Image (cartoon, rainbow over all chains, first blue to last red; front, side, top):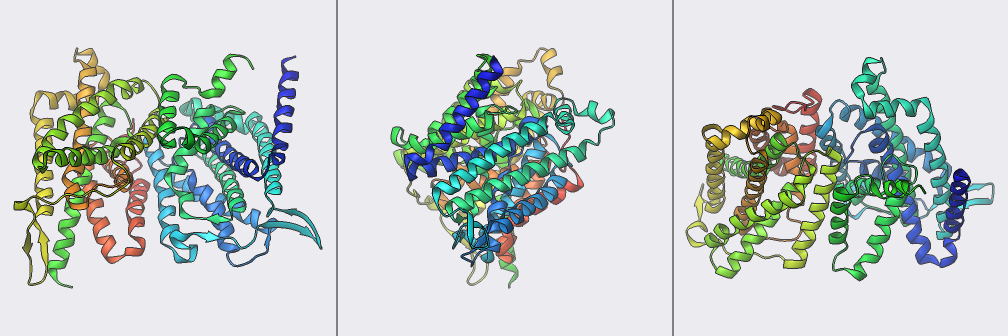
Length: 312
Length: 289
């Protein structure tokens, strides 16, 4: 009975989300942003919620996914999706390997600060490198497309198309995460999160497991950056900035870390608030800050935690 | 380039190092004693500067501005500790990071609501607004030397309080074993309040000293905020000695880097931090806890 209800709920939400393009381009673009940030939040949740690693530098991968696309296809109006997407993902994965290998040597607050430092390094690197457009960033001349012969299969220059593409990515990602968490690998991560010393004495190579988790999270973070760049067509150093890292961490915890819908819920709430609050309040930052403080003080398990208690 | 040029850069570097130390020392103490990582600590550099600017513009006197802003800031620190931070003592780092990140957003938007988005400067008062001639055509402003002098004095005062007084004894005891302090019957909550508020005052004091030089403006704390993270991590979180050493290193590196390698200047500081943490994952003088 309860599983049936859940499946109906999922299908219902999915149907509603697929119908968003009918509302016109404003809502399509807004919800594209929501879904992209949901993907970004899910990727961080793998670290925070499932591996117990608090990264304050996850924007490093968001930015890298976007910048690899921008760097390779800076002057070409034709962008082949089948080339661009794998390049972005590989770039992010390699970077995650490097940053992860360095950060995972430390722990606790040092890990938080070192991950932040690497993202800030990339921010300043993008800011000061002329080849990457400096503080002006990079404008894409075209959007990724996929064609066989002369038939266009996917053309991301239209806002409905990119919305559907992002939604598909999100659904695939949720399925992937579900499988990953249930797999033996996911169980080891769970063990590491809850008692690292015990896992180590059981003989698990803890460092290696954490590093693999970090690389997967980084690659998926790169995916969200790639999607954002394809969506807005504009890439700038603020993709790396630590406020992006802070914001995505807020989404994960606000929604409920280590849960299936949590990050999606958190991302939706934050992006929608950001969009509609300026009309209501003097400053959306003030409202967001206050919400964060209240959530931490009174709802440590996030919004999804409350829903779970009510057994939905 | 002449020797005096290097001297000027060195003096600027030391001055920045002192300021970073004032900000980072409070942050590192709060972590060492209370186990709280307060990301918003550097924001009080901005709050202090704005409060001092506000009182100065009311009283028309920088000295009064700073003297009245200091207790005001202490009060703010006290309230924030009671209303928010005190709920975090038994929570994990994640809650602390998030709550204090929220504080950063709140403080920076309150600044815009109260004081707007304009730059506000004041004139440096008369005995301090001159400059010392180093060579025929190179001068060094007296006010910068004054900042370093006052910061040095404050640092010495801190050393005295921590090493020679009863309060300092409790602080040192607290940073090596918190539980034992409680068992010995010391009012830990009061100690926490004092340490947190004094830390806030120190960060704010740094802002008060600097604002006559650079004016107050929105986002003035952004760079300092991140630099203070680097300083406490590099020095080893919880260690005052480490914070002093790394603040000086970072201050001088940032200044000389900005002059000689402007393209990669901001990179250097983070690079140094990453390298040191590869070699010593717990910072120069720190311990894992």
